Image (cartoon, rainbow, N blue to C red):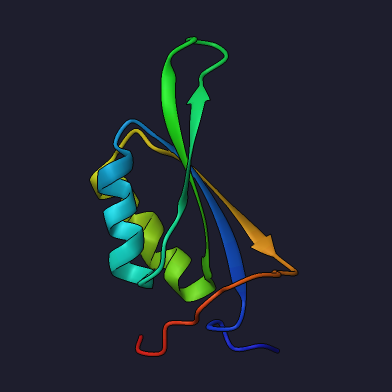
Length: 93
């Protein structure tokens, strides 16, 4: 069984407060996220979606902190089986 620091999860966060949510991601993980423009199909309102890959341990902390930054955020956490590209592991939990 892999240690949770090596297990990765992908977060998709739909929010009206992308700057505040991004700040939480950066503070917890010390790495970045990608922001997409999004439109709610039901409401036709513009929103933002942040995408970030984090460790399983970080994901648990982030969900709580994102909820505080934006209580109306929609958060989807997906287990990531494979990751290719530059991903820098935070070493001090």
